[in-house]
Amino acid sequence: MQEQITVIGDICKESHSSFQSFFKHDDTTSVASVMKEVITCGAIEGSDEHFIASELFIKREQREMFLSMSVEIRLGWLKRKFSVKCHLIVTVMMKTIMK
Image (cartoon, rainbow, N blue to C red):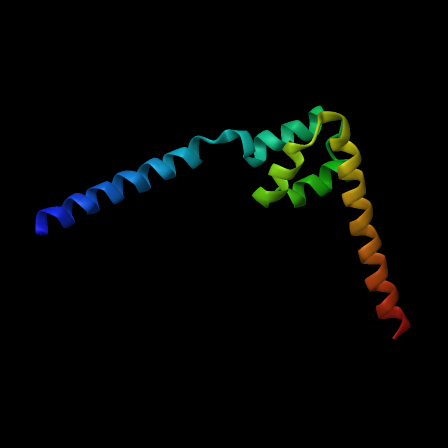
């Protein structure tokens, strides 16, 4: 029984190690690689689109969403994301002023 528990523990350690290794080597969705794709789709460093990408792509889900799109629509998507953020900020500011 003790031997079986030891074997199960060893298997768990190996599985965990493999899982960690997979995520460390998965560079396709790293922030750095996705930010390169931002430049490739036409966003200029320092632009509104580049800025919003730097905020969005902290989250893996947002990076994956961006990468799932065709290169042709990525820049437009970033522009819309920036526009929505600006609209929300203005809305909050107006509500604050109107109080």
